[in-house]
Image (cartoon, rainbow over all chains, first blue to last red; front, side, top):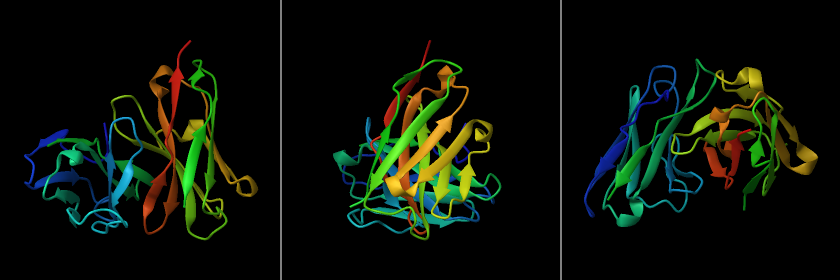
Length: 109
Length: 119
């Protein structure tokens, strides 16, 4: 059971917008930055969003992150078939003194 | 360009100790603020953070596995080693190492190495 809670799946049609939620607590999301990763089957995770809403170089601006209180979300607009992937949220947990992940959300486009 | 590569046995027996090596390039583990972490992913399951070592040799471990983990670094060889004792079939997973920076978190990951625990 993961420390951060994500919906196991999400689905939307091409061109539309989808939001993936990530719920935590005061010891992780509530007091730390949130990071999002994209992972295709059989490959390593790729950093998608850092520090709540910052995108690394090369990540399209269709991907955006936000945080409010002890929850965060990843929004993907203008959905494309190639966005079909697993998405994980992560944050530092001050109580556990380590990184925690969500259970992952499988996005179907 | 930062790259990391995990190496180690693909099969270990229950109760044995697993030793994994992360060999990296494109950065130095003596640079302030830099770290290397280990994360694993059982088949079909979520990511699980294991350990992190910083440039100053500060170490952090998952509280759930702390008693079984040891992380060390060899700056001259550009390597980080993770050992996990008392391996069990539930430890079967793909193990990743990742470059860690204070601002970006775990921003570059290795391809991963698959470890199966079976007698």
